[in-house]
Image: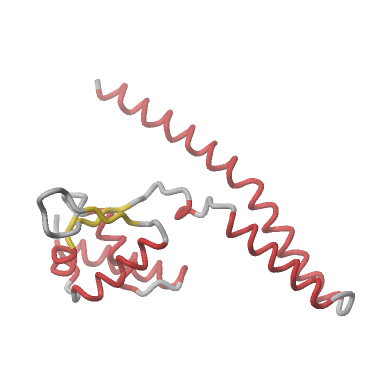
Length: 163
């Protein structure tokens, strides 16, 4: 694989995750690299060397991404270095976790209580936030199940064609 093309791809992911989620660019670059690297598990040293960045920057990104359940760290028996791999199908990291929407709706309800019956415009904004977040929390689990069923059918069909 062409290293320059890999770095460009990683930079694109770095910008995406920085713009969309406020991640440090190195975290998005790390995600990008883990999408395309061979083997799929890499040490922090290997990642830092490939992405032309410091081990400490990678280590900090790994810690942050672990808390988001976007990556997984493991240490095979007999080795001294952790291996980092992507967790692409983690339900939480794909936006399918309803708890964040439930929490936002709860916070908006708290805001409604705070403002009481004053300012209809401000109440309307909070009511929209509540409505949207309640809707998302209710629908996302079913949407994830539907996607998972379609994905599994696709995998089975691809395996059948490969035989």
